[in-house]
Amino acid sequence: TLVPTVFLVDDDGQDSRQRILDTVLFQRLFLCAEVVDRWLTDMLAHGGVPAKRAVDFLWRVSNSSIDDFTGGFGAANSGDWDRFYERREEVFMTVGGLKGIIASLVTLDNAETERAASTATIWHAMNNKLARPFVLGLVLIDLVLHLSLMIAFRSIAQRESTLSKVGVKPAAVVYFICTHYILRKGCEAWALLTVSVKVLKGYFSNLWNLFDSAAIILTLAMTIWHSNNEDEYLNGCNAFVMGLLWLKVLGFLKVV
Image (cartoon, rainbow, N blue to C red; front, side, top):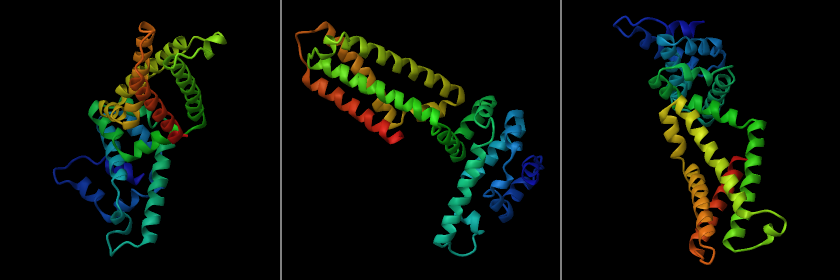
């Protein structure tokens, strides 16, 4: 098709490819879902120059503006803005729906992987995949585990014996769930690292992820402390940990 052909034009020292891509016609084509097809994943999987040009396409789509939609002729009205967002959403959805679009990023060079992963197009694709019913099911399972963790830690902090009466050891529940979370965070970190260091940093610098990590680590630490100091109380620390655990509940609700 026309778009991949132009992107694959060799550099001739006169920026011919860039001048063509900067024309009003091509700026408008970047907002047409019809131009997106398997050629994009094929170029990404090919590696080398084709992969770099495919990332250029993702970057241009992600940075499309209202002027690209209207051609820069006159001021855009509310109808123009609505159609612009609608067209860009259609392109994002089409790119995200391509088979193997995320997997193809792993084969790129580190620099190109980071550049692709930082585009709004790829972020949109990843967010849509996380919204699938299977992933939401995992989130609900995590919510149940987290509520169990809160009940167990509360029992430990307040020296309650309700769980023990039914044969459940609160400390064992805390150790099991915290270990599960720590192992999974490690797997998530490894998976994101294979995609991009920048993506990994962005994920763990997210405020909600910082709250999650702090809640799990401090819950485990306070449980160990209570196990070794049964006659001492740290009500302030217990309250702080419970506050972090409640924030994690809000994080679950935000996802659902």
